[in-house]
Amino acid sequence: MPLQYSAAKTSSVSKSHSPSKSPIKKFQRDAKKLLPSQSVYKNNLRKSNPSSPSQSSPSKVDNEKLQIQDYNVQLDYQLSSQDDVVVAVDTILSNRWSESTELHDRYKTRALVGTEKEKVYQIKGLASNSKAELLKYRHTLPPGLITVTQLYAIFHNQGPTFVDKSLELNIRRGILRKFVISNASPVISRSLNNFQSKKVTYGFEDIEVIAKVDCFHALIEKILAGSDEVSASKLSLSKFYDYIKRNPTGMFISTSKFSDEEVSNLVQLGFVTLTSNHFNEIERNYSISYPGCGTYLKLVNEGRTWLVKTLNKIKYKEALEDDIFKKWSGINLEGDPKLNNFRKPFFGYDLHWVLADALGSGIIEVFNTPVGRGWRLTGKV
Image 1 (cartoon, rainbow, N blue to C red):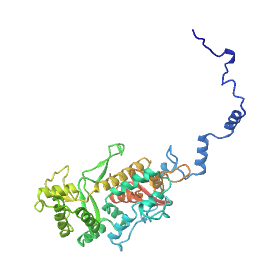
Image 2 (image 1 turned 90 degrees about the horizontal axis):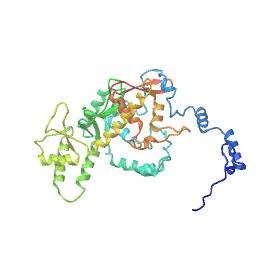
Image 3 (image 1 turned 180 degrees about the vertical axis):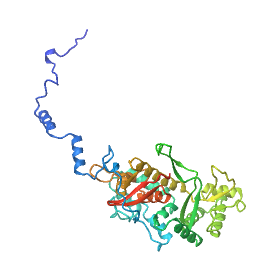
Image 4 (image 1 turned 30 degrees about the horizontal axis):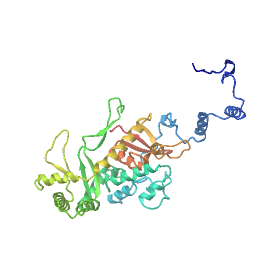
């Protein structure tokens, strides 16, 4: 039988009763008594930087009702009645992304130069894979689309009627084109417990989007010039192109003008969608669409969802604009933006257009306070 060795009882030392006599260990134990703990350090840091919001509990501001001065608000992107609605469309499109907007420089990106790709890769605080995903997403986003509700916000003082008249005039001139997307309006369904369900879906309502005619036509011409092969799809698209140029105000196509095969080809290309309603099914009626618009509408939907949920967490369902921007991007302990808005699902989409969409839809209202603009849920969701 092999011999087994074990330590003698007298050699066993209890670490709890006999601490190491190493001078290094002794220094570390003494230093721990003198240095503050991590939690103490974080609390001291918060006290020294009161503008940095607490991540674990609601701030004091969230529990206080905002003092309203008036509702005569001047928004950063607001235009006057002297400006045409086409100027408003350009304003939205040129200021869509947070790193290139001229409306603010909250993320210290105004000094970035170069192409969009070069600017994105110069943003500090984003990992390389996040930047690659951002660029990939933006490449799939259909160009030139905005919502009519955003235009309502840009002309907030003039009202929806002013926008509708200006839109109609530019549509008849062949400068802009309106698209009605069925059952696509982002609707936030709520239970009787006042938003407790927070369920956000596409509702039964239609949503209206606007695009420049030149942009829409360029998209069609790109597909037609894509290959030398003459296919049934290209013939259908060519016929559709002639049709929309002759009908600048048209939002639907008649099946008497297009065969079933032609309609099927246009549906596959994304230029036509079946118009139907959950309450009243309308067969054989097709609306003119913008290819890939579902990706854009999903972005609008995500923004509206985020805003409603964020304001709903606050006691009085209201917040200062600066505080909403901080929640949008996230703030670290040092008070710097965490750039959450540059990741999925927003990929750098600017908060101004989330607020504009919600304002134009009547979901929120805006007012002046002694310390800046305030935004409040209206209950219309």
